[in-house]
Image (cartoon, rainbow, N blue to C red; front, side, top):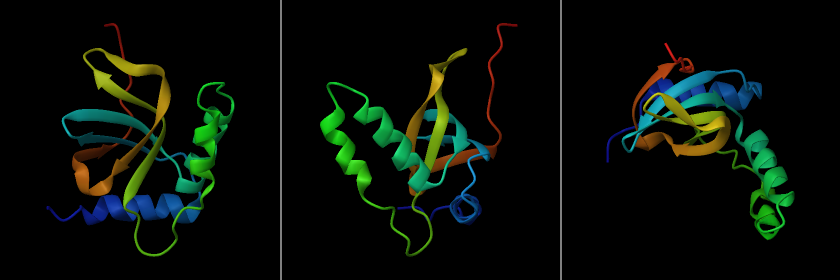
Length: 119
């Protein structure tokens, strides 16, 4: 198992410490390209919980996201919001989604959020 990139761990730690959701990042993981903004885990969990609570079919799963984020040690995951998986010239979903990516699974990354163009 490869050792995770210390730079990306530092970025994730700063997002967690500053409770900021403005850091844009694009990662390659498992052959997929995910682009969006990072969020602190607690904020990400809250938003996922809200979405599930509002769903008639999935509301029972919202309790899973009530557990607090672990605090000890460096971050192990990136928590994306308003994120898209790049698929050809489009991002899926168009409006952005919530993704959790294990840092150890990131094979490449860049600062910034890719946008789309019809040109």
